[in-house]
Image 1 (spheres, rainbow, N blue to C red):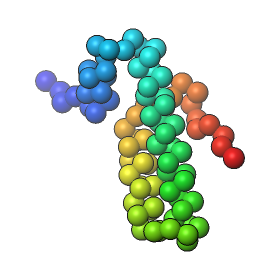
Image 2: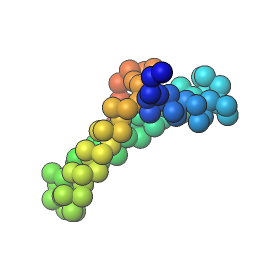
Image 3: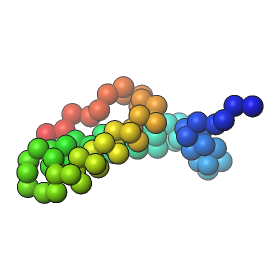
Image 4: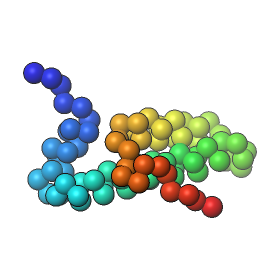
Length: 81
């Protein structure tokens, strides 16, 4: 028996409440949220206006979290100003 991946665990937890299309939307929103927060934390890291070490740690955590998720259907991050 294989060990379930974090995504399979998430699908099992959400699967009963969500249809496949809804689950895909939730995962895409989570991916985009990780991406946005990573970009903000990265900007704070290099801006020097905040706690650079905490911002860098947050950016790394978001990157690691995003790597656990499948790519959203749109396939790339949204363009942000």
